[in-house]
Image (cartoon, rainbow, N blue to C red; front, side):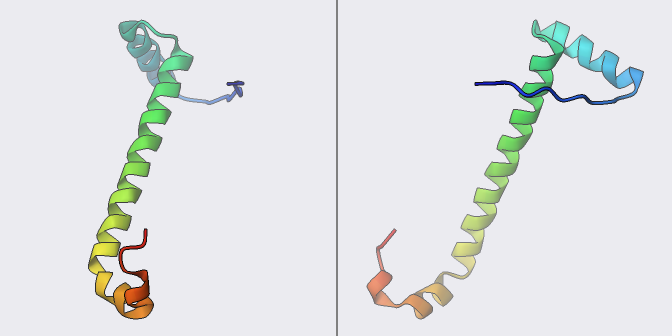
Length: 75
């Protein structure tokens, strides 16, 4: 997969923390940051799916009334 370069400005303490965490994990700072973003994006996606499922459960009867029996069991 092609890579895109990002330039990020952080204070020195944050930069040093990133360097130390990457070193502890045995990866580059780039890889460490990439992993953090992927993990965060995955959590947001999971939260969205959970919220959508809760919404559908809450309004299930409304959807059933609106779309009727012909949609029953359709996915």
